[in-house]
Image 1 (cartoon, rainbow, N blue to C red):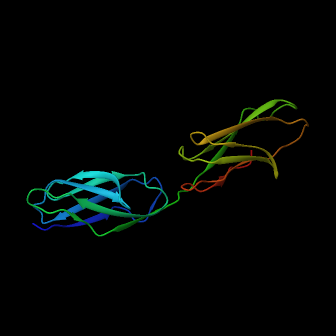
Image 2: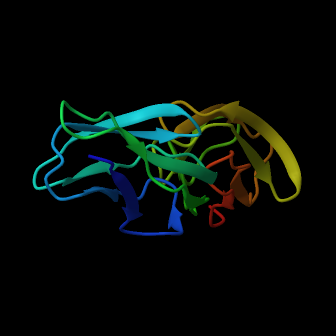
Image 3: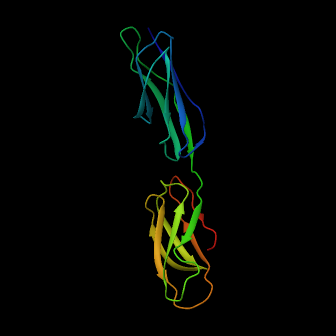
Length: 178
């Protein structure tokens, strides 16, 4: 038997990291077997059909447009087929940068560690620390956080912020002043 397929998404567009439910259907309803879901030709998961349909949960799509298809392999009585393309759009997600200090207030010449934590642990890239407009250090994130150590050699008030530059999936943000 000749088959046709369809692929739908539970959320389109979706923000980066969202859990999507991709549902594949094969017609006629007597089709059995496996459907491979592909992103521009690359397999991103497989579905075992039950009543000629099945679903795949996925949250790993990166920011951008993804051309998804459901490829039915066929079986002894049903021919294989490929669904029309579904263009799944993934948009970047926001971030919140939180800044903490190992000592506040601190004494003159006291070593202080400033730590910036990004609200998404999968955020990558750099964080820049400033005292007012002056850069006092920067670091590469590891598991969504980064730290610098410094000391201030004069008494007075400092206005420390941490700015996360963002990456291809997570937008940048700046902490509140500490």
